[in-house]
Image (cartoon, rainbow, N blue to C red; front, side, top):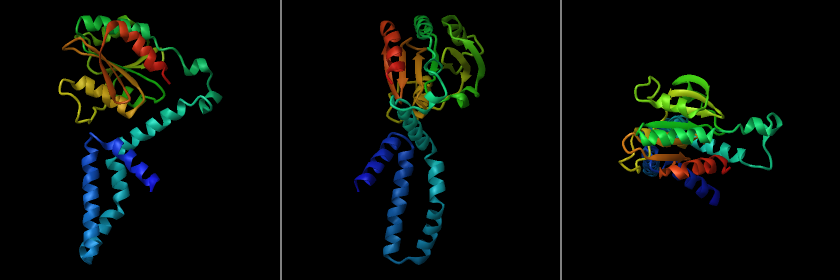
Length: 246
């Protein structure tokens, strides 16, 4: 009973504040209706519902695909942070696994774009590959530098619309399309750029840095939680802490 209660709690935490919770409530309502039909021996209705439930597993996988993906990503991310055993150590050296992200270049670019109120969305890859998001944009594989980042997000640049994905010390891709968070409890002042940052951090273990075009404020999103109005002095320390906290 405790195990079932734990599974139900985990299911709730995955679906709360999303559209999926409405689907879950609807399915639970159908299940209660089926119990009522069975109690009154309504054979025809019961037969129809049984046919519906026979394909229910496949339907659930399709409907809850984002939540299932998020759960597996979080589980894998927790596994990779275990220091006592990691399979990837058998194939890669520590230097290969932890190629330094150029935090100073990212910080300097964000400070300059904040001062000029240039909107930006920078996604830094951790353990989860972001290839499927990178393929929606233009692959660059260029060395990370503050000047290049500022040029990409310059409002007249053909690459400014969308997100930049950082992979280790490289700008992997620009003009990338990201999933938008379905969290209905987000403040109304958060625009599409912030919601995209939350969306990618909900579905992966990536870190996202946002520069607001309206206010110039810098925010950081991590694991579906956004830290707004990060000061210039705190930006580098915050990035360093978030990227090394594992």
